[in-house]
Image (cartoon, rainbow, N blue to C red):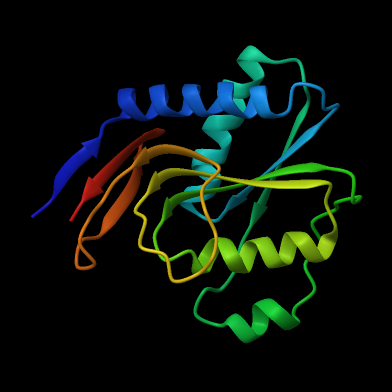
Length: 164
């Protein structure tokens, strides 16, 4: 059974609110880097970047990050070139935060590159952590069972979140 938990309009409202929260947290910064985890995290990051640029003059650089979640050995041994200078404020963005494994792996990669501050943003936070990471900015926090699955789909440039 599939239920819509967020339609595109609701997602846009959540993203707008997150953009304001990110601005409040970083008002004095000269640049912010958004890193979106491929694939859906990049789509959320693009929408968040657009919303942020509507309300702020702070430049935002968007970097997609593709990682193989099934091969954590590769994550810890592979060199990633994120072109970070070590002084950036980084917002790590994904669509759904479930166990925290994906965000932990991505945070490891980003921290190895050296950053000034790292924050996380997710569209939906499920709160089923296996790893010690949290969402600093969340569009929706939802308690689900372990058997439930949340899927964010993109159709014609619009995002929709489903509970399956």
